[in-house]
Amino acid sequence: MRIAQRAQRVEPFYVMELAKAAQAMAASAAPGDRSMLYLNIGEPDFTAPPLVQEAAIRAIHGGQSQYTPATGLPALRRAISGWYAARFGLDIDPGRIVITAGASAALQLACLALIEAGDEVLMPDPSYPCNRQFVQAAEGRATLIRTGPAERFQLSAAQVEVAWNPATRGVLLASPSNPTGTSIARDELERIARVVRARGGITMVDEIYLGLSYDDAYGHSALGLPDGLGDEVISVNSFSKYFNMTGWRLGWLVLPPALVPAVERLAQNLFICASTVAQHAALACFEPESLAEYERRRAEFRARRDYFIPELKRLGMAVPVEPDGAFYAWADVTQLCKRWGIAPRGERPDEGGSWALAFELMKRCQLATTPGRDFGQADPWRYLRFSTANSMAQLQEAVRRLEQAL
Image (cartoon, rainbow, N blue to C red):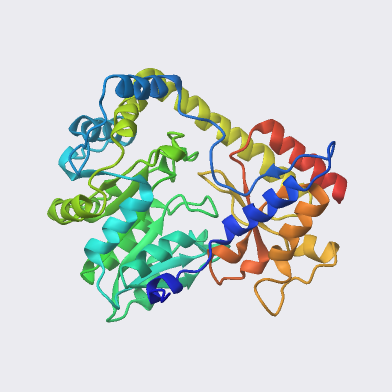
């Protein structure tokens, strides 16, 4: 069977490959052996709060399962608009909001609406690997720009200006970012948007972790940029992370008004609509009781970060930039590799460095982590991503096992 080139160009998602290896190792464990701890997947251990679950049950029992408009339930679009007003002080017209089948569908729709074959989109290295694939699926080209601790692992306006060329269509940013948990400072984000505007480009910002910001200096939406820049931004968001609804597959876009009809046509043809039951359930996310619970959980995620990162440092794994959001620790494991006799890097990406260390941690500590290989070419062998979305008890156990192994 002939497989299309676009499918063959998609690289494996190594996070999932490691997850399969961890699950296989766990399945082969003898009775009484330690269970595997999974600090590799970025999924909250919390589930949807009670009011959301109850709303889903009511929708099912009430037969509220027919198609909705392709842009989503009007009531849900209004509720999201109200959340922006209450949380960020932003006046977002509900007509600019399009409900999607998760942030993945949102990114796919935005890329298909804006990117032509051969267009180049600038992205930071490291960054979430699937975002590159959405650009590629639209026949564009993701161009990774090396970043480091000095840039908080984020693009700067100066880098965008230097990298821009006739094929460049725009930038795709993430704030806070996966895998680093770092955000773009407000003034730097404004400078980037101005550089892009001056060149007639597009600014897309993945804000799915925005609700899980812990620092007021960074907890802002690109939609609030001054001088009309916020009205030009394409913002991607989701109910998965802050709202703890990963498997419900529900997200949204905030678009410039002129882009809404094009995205609506694409959504009608590609998705028809997002899950109706999930949309009715998500209305309950914005009830005062639910919002209070989400804020309690945000404080818990922050406490986990504040415990785990100092422990990593104590054990010899540097975290070059303190994450200000999300639930990740992007750790430099060079010294640990040397200590365990693992080559700091190999000739191939599947040997040495953090890749080999991840398998060693599974064997020695029954601890699943994510090596840097997925996230770009900027020294991926040097970094390991830990997810702190797990319970405090599991994080404490992970530290105990690491300390014992060391």
